[in-house]
Length: 157
Image 1 (cartoon, rainbow, N blue to C red):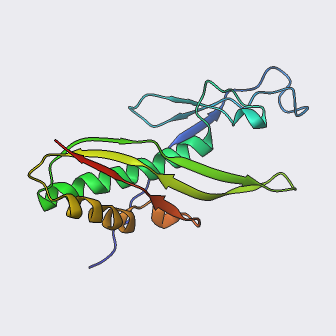
Image 2: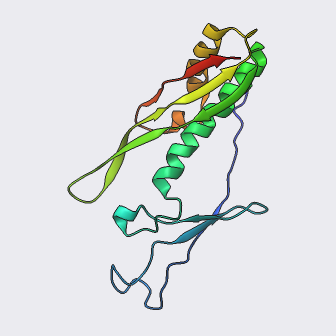
């Protein structure tokens, strides 16, 4: 089977010119907007540690969210195929980034912490095992060069 190619097009527009452009490190904001045709705009900035606006999403938060949502969507799909009825799914993932002496940095890990409720007729052990399969299939996790750990908690009602 020939691999399928998918292309994703977004618009990222810097909105932080305060009148002097980037004439100095402190004369502009890091504010920008992320948009895709037909969807709401995401107001973004850099992390406040890097002169960003704390009321806007930053790239690091969006990376952690992308890993979490990709895993969740695969997990829900796999559960549906396996006959496991998921009632609720909430994740509170964390990501750790290490800043280096030269000002650059990289993520060293992301930990997903999904709390899932399944119905009592569903197989709890299989529900736990499907997290491994979801991780193997996650497009975003397969694209990063740091570990992504998953620590699921499963409850039944």
